[in-house]
Image 1 (cartoon, rainbow, N blue to C red):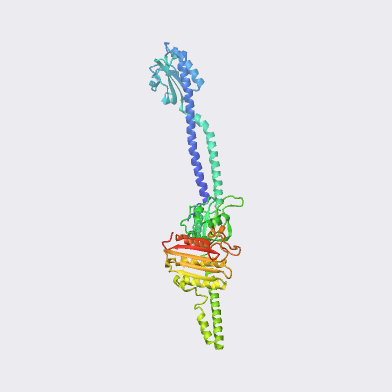
Image 2: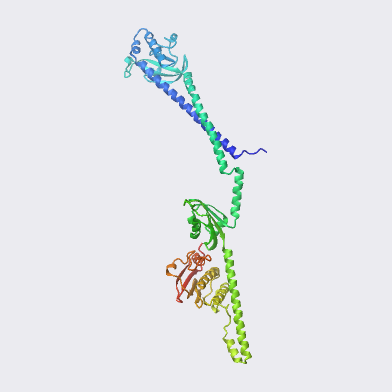
Amino acid sequence: MVRALSLRLQLLLLQALIVCVVTLGAGVVTVWIQESAIRDSYRERMVGVALSIARLPVIVEAFDDPDPSVAIQPVAEVIREASSLTYVVVTDPSGIRFSHPNPDRIGESVSTDPSIPLSGQVWSGTETGTLGESYRVKVPVFADGDEEGAQVIGSVSVGVLESELAADLQSRLPGLLLAFGGAAVAGVFGAAWVAALIRRRIFGLEPDEIAEMVGERETMLHRLSEGVVRVDHRGIVTSANDAAERLIGRGPLVGRRADETLDGPLLQVMEDGEPEGRLVLAGERPVIARSTGLRDDRGRSVGATLLLRDHSELHEALRQMDGQQSLTEGLRAQAHEFANSLHVVSGLLELGAYDDARDFIARVRPGGPLDPGPDAAALGSELTALLSVKLARSRELDVALEVTALGTPAPEVIGDLVTVVGNLVDNALEACRPGDRLRVEVDATGPGVRVRVDDSGAGVPAALREHVFDEGVSTKDTRDRARGIGLALVRRVARRRGGDARVVPSPLGGARFEVSLPVAERVS
C-alpha cells in the first residue's frame, strides 16, 4: 500500500504550487503591461514624428511641385533614420507614395486603406504592408499646414515592424524572468520554512494523528465524571463536557459568556484561581470547584479551566452520618432515662410505696427523647424522622426544642421541606447555647407551606441580615470547615418554587428564619 504524503511535504508542495502559479500569473501580467508600455511609447513617438512631418513647410509646399518626391523623399529618409523608424511614407489624396524606404515603391499606390487620415483623423494600429506586419500611425496633411482648414492634401504614415517591437520586449525579458524566478525560489524556500514551523507547532503530528487525538480528547472529556469548563481570554466558554452542563444546569455552555452562565461563586473561583478547591453551590448542588485563574502573574487576561466535582453524594453521606450519630445518642439517652425510671420504680416497690410508684409511673411522659410531639405526626414520616433526630441532638446540647405543625404538607413539597427544615434547625442549634430555646413551626394550612424557626441564641447582626443567605457568608468561624452553604441552599430552594427566605429578630431573643414554599409547578 502506498504511504500517504506527510503533512510537511503536502504543505510544501501545496505552497510551492501556489507560489509558482501566482508568480507565473504575475509574470504574464507584467509582460503584458510591459508590452503595452512599449507599444504606447512607440505610438507617442510615431504620432509626434508624423505630425511634425505633416506640418513641415518643405513637405506642404512640395505638394505643389511637378514631382513632389524630389523634395519629400530626402527629408522623409533623414527623419526616418533619425527616429529609428522602419518607414516614413508621404502620399497624395489618391494614396500615391511620394516617399518610401524602397525608392522603387515611390509613385505606387499604398497597399493599405488611406481613407481615415485623408478624412482628417489620426489613426494607429497594426497592418501588413510591403515591408511586412508593422505597427503604424497615419496622420493627415492639411494645406498650408493648417489643421483648422478643411482641405486635406495628403497623408503621412510612419511605422515600425512588429518584429522590432518583439525584439525590444525580448531584450527586457531576462531581467523580468530573473526577478520572478528569484521570487519563486524565495517563495519555495519560504514555504519550506512555513511547513517546518507548522510541523513544530503541531509537535510533528500528522492529520490522521491529530484527528485521532481530537476524537480521544472528546471521548475522554465527555466521559469524565468531573465537570470541565474551558474559558478563553475574552471570557467565552470554548469547551464544556456533559458533566459540567449537568452540574451547572444552564443548557449548552459552549459559545456563551462565562459571566452569563456561571453563578457568582463559580465565576469568582474561575477568576481568582483555586487550585486546592472550594465548596460552592452550582444551582442547588454542592460542588468542589478548582480553577487555574483568568489572569497570569503579570495581570494579563488568559484562558482558564474550571473543574467541578459533584459533592452532593458526599454531602448527603455526611448529613446521614450526623443523623445516625444523633439518633444513636438519642437512643442512648432514651435507654439511660428509661433505666433511671426503672430504678426509681424498683426502689419504691422495695420500700413498699406502691401508691408512690403508681403516681411516678403516671407522671412519666410517654414517648421519650425521640418523640417530637403529637403535632409532628401530621408532617409525614420523613419530616417526623428528621425532627426526631434533631430533638435528640437538641437534648444532648441542652437546648429545648418545640415543634408545632399546622396542617399536612402536600407530597410534592416534602423533599424540599426536609432540606429547608434540616438546614434551618442545624443552623439554629449551632447558634444556641446550653439552656436556650428553639421553636420550629411548619404551617401547611395555606396554599403553600411556611416554615418558621425561632431561637434564643445570639441572633444575626443587622448589618449581616441582607447577606446571610449569600453563598460563603456565615456568622461562624469558617477556618475549620466550609460554611455559608446551608442558608444559601435554603433560599435557592425557596426561590425555585417562587417563594423566598428572610431573617428577622425573634421574640425569643435570637433570630427568626422564615421561608415560604408555594405548592405549585416548579419554576424552571
